[in-house]
Length: 269
Image 1: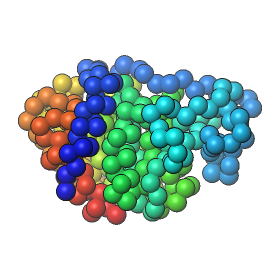
Image 2: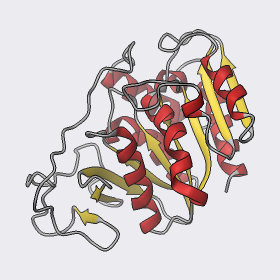
Image 3: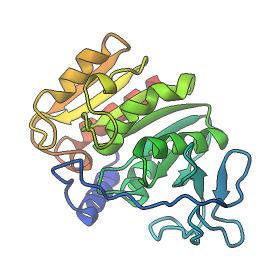
Image 4: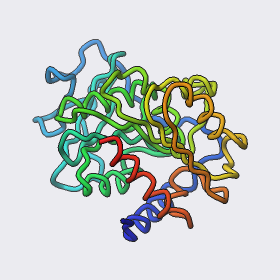
């Protein structure tokens, strides 16, 4: 069932952050310097923002983003395998986890409306900021979600978030139940330069894009689906128009895309 208020919320978010950039190679990551003395962490590698005076790996105070609700959820800094820190916000609860990555021009706040809607449907969500290594960021968010009660995950996202989800899914083992890619395609800057690098996951994948996507060459999603068919099953949805990533959810095909995401998540529970 569609939720008309969600489309309006995404539309407001899309207007706030602007239309997606024409090149994914533009960097808008939040810097996260390493430190010889990283902050104290829990055994799962997190430093909770609710602790007294928490700091990040650069010694800066951990500040909860203004877009987050004043209560509820968990805002933390998750240690990556390369000893940097990735800001992560967890919401919802339960074993069925979803990790959502933002566009190249986005962050936690950009994808929060999507995450809130899915949390309302019973899923356990992780959203995060981009820092110095995009694959590290998504893997860190996945580990944070698993450490807080999720048992299996669907990785997904929009543009950069989509392609990074496709690329890192094989690295996380049997905990990954599927991948959702909305306007994803190969990008050397993001660490996955070829179609083949996005087609290694042995599991179900949902690929969504517009037919005239302005960022990737025509046929990119079809090419990923064809390459991935040797490793797993695909759902491929191509809609008319030129909307890219989050703009697809706010556009004329938003309800169809929303329904496809809901159905995919239900099948991979």
